[in-house]
Image (cartoon, rainbow, N blue to C red; front, top):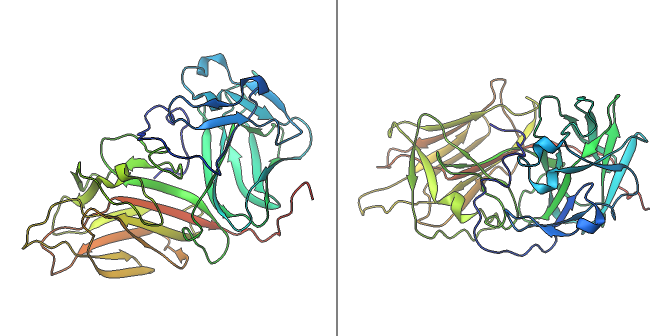
Length: 361
């Protein structure tokens, strides 16, 4: 499954439904000239502003013109940092609030040198990731869910070699504080998918939190769909369009299996599984199954609710075995129908042990 996004896709094939509020959203188009700011993205309606008010260092540039018709507007400009080992954005947030934080970087041969950058990104004093843009002509987008520890959030780029750090976009979205709760640390996105074999990806405005959902479908699955309205009013607010399809096993007496390899392989994992019954069951029909993540999680006798989402999730961090993570939905003896699943999210824990302080402190 994907661990990063191809930015040429995002903003081109999104499933978008209706208008939603952007309260609390921060959407920065890095390197955008002030006289071009703000603007509304033509594909999803998100309002982007220049990053110039949030950082005092770095220089602006544009990707090669050959990418102008491939990439969304927010990826056509960038900020690069030829001076200093550490350069930081300082952003206003609310202490104690859970945030989805996404950073996008597109090299686009802006300097004509054909040298893909490598650098690190930190949240305050804590390392989030090492960014390596080699072979990623259309860039990459990385996500993390992190609870703010103060009213200021610093996103810092660290030079690690000969190339300059670059950044194209920063997107921050507030989440409900009763979702994606961890014992410690932040959650780095491993994948977020909905089970569909034909549709494009989903994001804002259909997802009010602007999470990006990619379609995923295994060769051993059968698809079921509905056009009926689905109640998605639980804390996770999974978009309705992601719930209108589901996967069941082609072998109706067998399990539905999903496997993946976390990064790193010994990562602590949190899993969020979203279910809704989207078929009209006859009086003599039952759908009941066990949800098993081998060695970690077992929920017995689960029955999806008719046209209403229910989310099962791991309350404790889990560690999968050396072969990876193995999720099975196993039909019970009482069931007349195979198991199903509509959508699924997996995250790996990143520990942030250092106390965060703002660069303005």
